[in-house]
Image 1 (cartoon, one colour):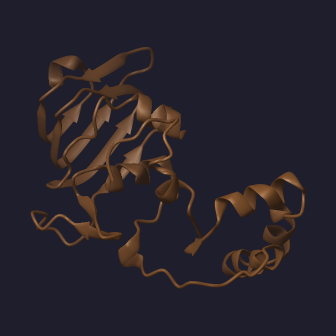
Image 2 (image 1 turned 60 degrees about the vertical axis):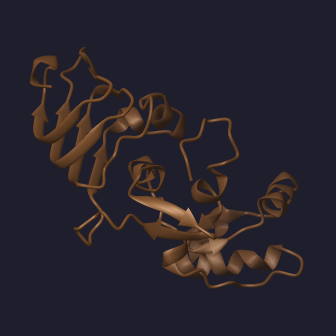
Image 3 (image 1 turned 120 degrees about the horizontal axis):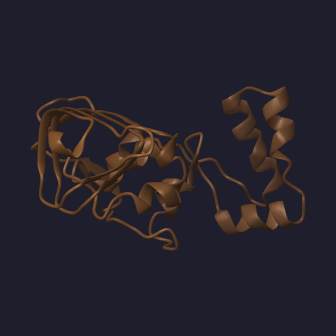
Length: 186
């Protein structure tokens, strides 16, 4: 999977195709939503999360359940989670998510992007290209921060733009165990 634009369908399987580890036919879902036949709010108020998602299949003709192993996807619960599958940390090989063997740490990096990255459009607009994160342990970004191209993040990186300040991480920079609060810190 590569970097995609907000208008591209390329991200759709990662962003929308998995709901509570269930794959959905998005055309069928749209048809049900358009005809008001799918009332999700009723299920979430009265039932638990997994039960609610499983119960939704009753609105689909010829619905079947498919158990999707976690090796096929990275859960996306917030825009911070988009950085993992978009980066060089993972690739897709015949539909299977493959972790980059260059990553020595068995855990995924911790990524915390501030509210300025809150929507997919916001997220995509703040990255000229997705940084290399194979050697990243943690990333915390707060404030009006944007990233240039060909950036490498390693170790623990904290980037905080003060209120009213725009902080741009320049093209080609390598940030290793850095705390950045000002352009002079880069």
